[in-house]
Image 1 (cartoon, rainbow, N blue to C red):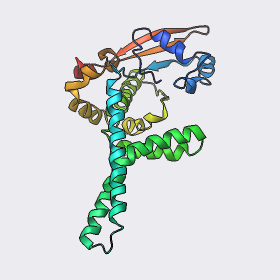
Image 2 (tube, helix red, strand yellow):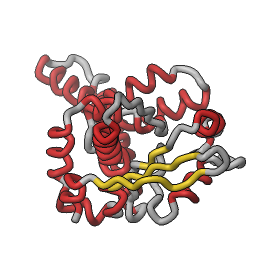
Image 3 (tube, rainbow, N blue to C red):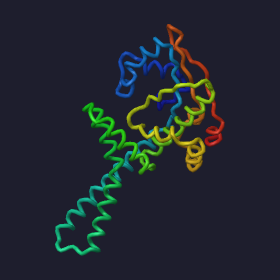
Image 4 (cartoon, helix red, strand yellow):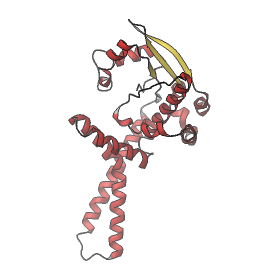
Length: 242
């Protein structure tokens, strides 16, 4: 279950925020879920990653906005240049290249816009999700720290948790729509996930709270109350951030 806060400090408080009677935009997705979890006594796992500060998110939002701005500039420039006739084959190819680059640069912004629009209108969610997954593949640098790394770490923790459980476990991943790219990471191999994280090792300890990077917590419902269960530690992730 998604929680980008430092849930290790007080996992029970984080769970109560999700299960609260006055849900926020972030927690409203869980409103109908908790009665089912409590009736069936299904455990909840916190396996997300906490960013040390919001500056990383601000930088990545600026990156996406910058790419979108450059895309708009290139498209406007291309439209202006096509007004001048005739156009040679060489100039036509240059204009086509600019248009292709502009389209490529706009993908992260357009995918975010599509997700927001589909959630607001409650239509086209499947199409916007597929577009977001394509954006995740084509632009791994977009939302690298606030989405991509979190997706990879959560996916890796899920695989390891399933190995701990052994007897044909069934896990459901409940994250916000912006994390739809996690489907690719779940299907990836552990080796590929760790290799990708290894390339970011010099900055991981500066961006994320170490404990949340290599630990997960299980929350259990006893029929009346939620309680903190086992804490799991993943040595291969710990080696990347300590």
